[in-house]
Length: 461
Ligand code: UD1
Ligand code: CA
Image: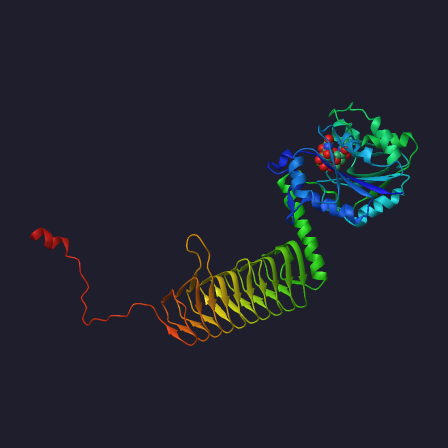
């Protein structure tokens, strides 16, 4: 028996009040639907079918690479009608699992359990018990506690509305039966829709066993309809991720103030302080410390490197024993060799900084090759842009660049050279030379500053 998974994703999600279709709203920086598809694929199904409607082009533009079958539901006539759109592609002997594109956090274990419980013969339903069941379909049971059907909130009698066990919407059915039941649905209900939930009563009528599995953690079945619910699930997602990372040995000063929006590889004794955001693919080697309020996006940090508070690093490769920040900004294609130091208010971009080199204060180094053991003083700027093109600055080993120097690219400063403070360097400097280009100082004795003539004196004249 093969497993076919149908993901319902045709809803508009008007309550999100967004230009994005609901299933593209980000959770941990990935679309809601991506989470559901990844969970679905982890169950190793024969096929995953995604029923799309509203914003279908945009969804397929963004997620077309996913290994799923796209099925259009042009008009949204209800959950039963939505599943029916996928049925022509599903063989009779299959087991069908229905998931929702806006319910992102169901665990693989729970779904596997739901699939196994039905064993391809029964219908299995994922249910949960809520203190406030408002809005959900209620699970109706008979005196022997056997499920007899699901009744939607809008169709429920007051007695049925008091039932606290609700339908999560996730269920499995044998395909052949499901095809038959769906073909016989009617829309004679309060919403004028073809309800998938009506297949339960049909199963009971046809003596097909209906079993239920209860989720304990209700977030597993929680859906996203508005930005509040999206934020709630984001916190749960982050908290669970943080717990897993801590179990793998990561030290988080406060897991409630840590966000990983992507993937993290880390070694031993890595410590992350509060309010750190990691995005994309981040790799932190043994002994890396990341101070408070840092953002690291797609980067790799070598052993024992320290990043101090309020630093931003993106698309960069950092060696071992480097010292970065506080308040440093490493922009894309920065490569720091071992023991390099980047201090406060320093910005780098497309820069190769050699081992042991230091740029400690208030500088911009872009489109640059910097050798080993170079000292770049405070306020040094590589003038890399002439208004049309970017040019390169090359600085050899052991160069000393004094404070407040502009290096007008393209320019080369060969090894061991010294650049005097306040210089504007427009010509190449040879190895071992001193280059100074500032104006000479003039000093005058007894200099009298101009002084203002007072108003009173002017009137008397
Ligand atoms: C549905 C269930 C209800 C359950 C609740 C759980 C039915 C009739 N009711 O109600 O028992 O408690 O989910 O959240 O199934 N969708 C389509 N095409 C459609 C209609 C819906 O793809 O024509 C998709 C939506 O995008 C959404 C999912 O199906 O992902 C559920 O639809 P929604 O309208 O939210 O169902 P509810 O009324 O909440
Ligand atoms: Ca819903």
